[in-house]
Image (cartoon, rainbow, N blue to C red; front, top):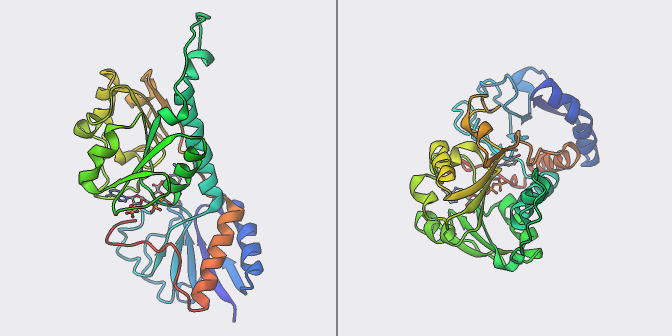
Length: 310
Ligand code: NAP
Ligand code: GLV
């Protein structure tokens, strides 16, 4: 019998994913009707992005799982009508994209590229950069993306530390965990990368107090989520030179409002939530594989823990 899979996301998403998902489902040996509208009671799985108009999941009484097109699930994890298993996106294409994006911005800071790329007075200023092994990059969040970024930076010889909720053993990474570990993690960080989910516990992880744990002149790269940083505290730390520069990809309100101080701050680079888009072909394979698991009685991969919020 054919499965009914509801694609609940924007029209743009449909144009991007429709064919890739159909191919992936067929390659996984699944007979499935992939549709954008259906009688709720006939739907077996929902592929979902918050760009969808679907907010009330209660009529979908036979759905076996909702599969998110996004890695971050903060926009749906608290939806009380979503009582079925919720799977977050883990996509090798997205992981590679995040690794490339973070590594690029780490290298910008590490090599001091701005001094030479933007050099309006044509200054010939010689300086020698420390080697990567003399530079510590601290990754807040040692999950799917944080670990991939850590491995790439280690391969370039950076000294890498990390912080997570539970203890983690990642080869080559000095790891800290829990609220008590944050000070130790930050106090040796030349560059901080935020790859935490947006939860009640992670809000304002970087605030007036914790920004003060950093060595003076540290750099911040945030491709995680906007609420991880207290905006006003960051501006204050930038103005005081406590933080030398910040590259921010994600914000409390997106698009970032025109009057937000980040746009005009000389030591902030704003990028428009582009660090790591879900890739249609690779993510479709992951979705199809997870649906196949559901159909063959295996547990779903990458299930969201509702109590933790990620
Ligand atoms: P993940 O695999 O779930 O990893 C999350 C990490 O954060 C884990 O190491 C987790 O600790 C840690 N963490 C969670 N709560 C914490 C807390 N209270 N204190 C300390 N550590 C905590 O997530 P992921 O796939 O790596 O993705 C991370 C985030 O990246 C997403 O949630 C999303 O917001 C963001 N993202 C952004 C983009 C973009 O384009 N900008 C793209 C994709 C994803 P444990 O290991 O102990 O569980
Ligand atoms: C993008 O930000 C995602 O969470 O997938």
